[in-house]
Image 1 (tube, rainbow, N blue to C red):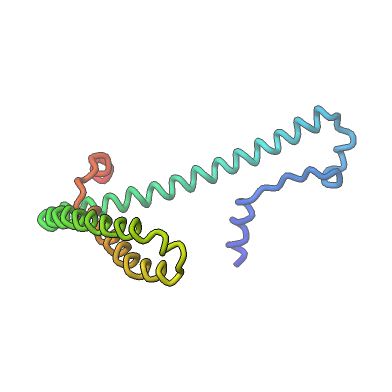
Image 2 (tube, helix red, strand yellow):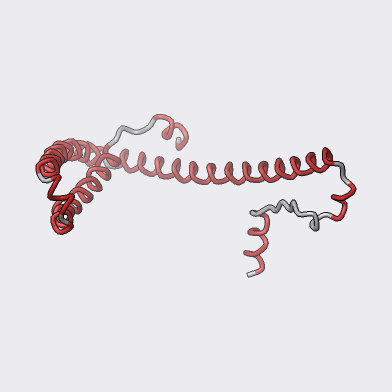
Length: 157
């Protein structure tokens, strides 16, 4: 438990600007006090930048790992990856037709949808889940079928 408390203490920095926090503040000139405060702000900003860099590195490393695994899967299953591409293209056409139906419905019943909560709920129940699931399936198929990124292959090889 004490191990977890120690790293979290380094995540936060504190800048006290009240007169009681530093007894020597009264002896500092306004220029010196301003300089000290600016240094404190700079130190805190440097720490914040370090944390952001760590966060970016963490996120990018997991993204690189995911891309490498996806590339390996595509190399191991080239026929399936090609079939996924074809299916994604076909479902994209279905999605376009579905969106056209949806927009026609919205445009023809806009006043009723504004006035009646029941009709709006009915519309959302009718189109919402189907659109969400269709988008999810297309996204998965597109990821599994996309051409491998040359930079991710160079990193994994």
